[in-house]
Image 1 (spheres, helix red, strand yellow):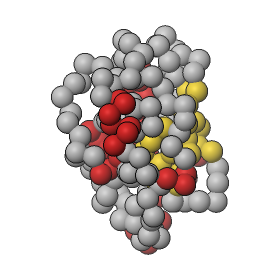
Image 2 (cartoon, one colour):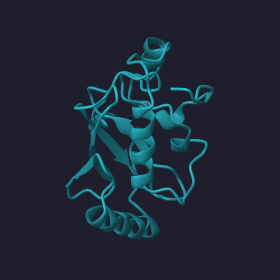
Image 3 (cartoon, one colour):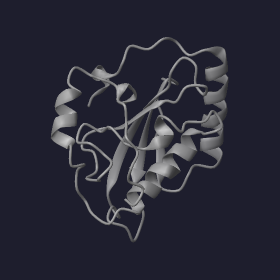
Image 4 (spheres, helix red, strand yellow):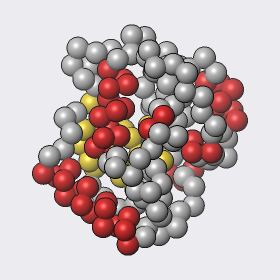
Length: 161
C-alpha cells in the first residue's frame, strides 16, 4: 500500500496538532525501544521504522509503519498500516493492514503512538509462525481502490498469536 492510496484527510484540529507535537517531543526524548521515527515536515503522517525484537521470529528484520492521523486525533484512532513489504504474521495482511483491536474497537484517547508501537512489537514478538491470515487473498482483493482498514468490520477472536 502506498501513500497515494490513503484516504483523503481533513486538516488536523488544534487539539490534534497540540497532542501530536507533544507526542513527537516525548518520542525524541524517550523513543520506544526498537522504533525510529523518520523525520518529515508532515505532522499528519508519520513513518516509523520497526526493528524486530531479538530472540523472536522477526529478529534482525526491519519494517515500516505508516501512521495517518485523523482530524480529531486522539478522540479518533489513527490509521496504522505496514508499508510494503509487510511482515508475514497471522494478523497482518499482505497489503499492510493490521488486525489489532486497539487500532479500532478498543482505541482510547489515552493511547499514544508509542503505546501503539509497543503493542505492535508485542504482537510480532509473540508470534510462533510466519504466515499470512487464512483469508488474506480474499481480504486484500476486497480492499482494492485504497480502502482504509478502518472501514473493515474486524472480528477479534484470536489472541494467541
